[in-house]
Image (cartoon, rainbow, N blue to C red; front, side, top):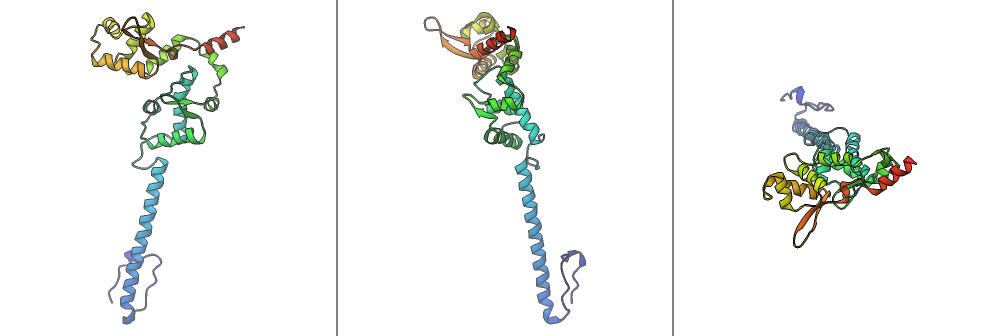
Length: 246
């Protein structure tokens, strides 16, 4: 009878009698048991990988801090918008980047699902996501806290931090603050550049896309770029500040 090496025998294997009539049956049982053991291990490994991917901790998952910190990072970004009463929302791409990831990161997807569908701290707006009142209260911020924000200068600094330094968004925003409504050519001339250049076009597009500027009809057939109400501290903030000063 052939001797099966001990190292390949399953742990729960009991040797069969050495009777020749049982020999072939014994070998079949051995290999059947080995195959069954391998299948169990394979299934267990597959379940473990699936669980890791679902939790965002697997090898194919995007690196990120624990889920609680992820949610807090997202809420911090949206809280800035909420403080300045900007209701247009933060685009999904921008929100993910400012939170430390991208919109395809598993940890970001899971955190947003929790904040939006389970806790209702985040909701959709016209151009992206905003914080709900419940979300603001969770972050320890209420409408009465708006009196702490102060000035347009603080808001403008926050707005300019959102623009990509590669383009002329900051410069265009500053010109609109200083001179008021301007045509494309007027803005480009003041910057000393062509209004067809990539840097100018992308900068202007960025200022409009964030909801801080819009194009309106000017004199005659001209169209002018002007700042929206989102670019200034709202009246509600001024009223609260006035009440606090009494």
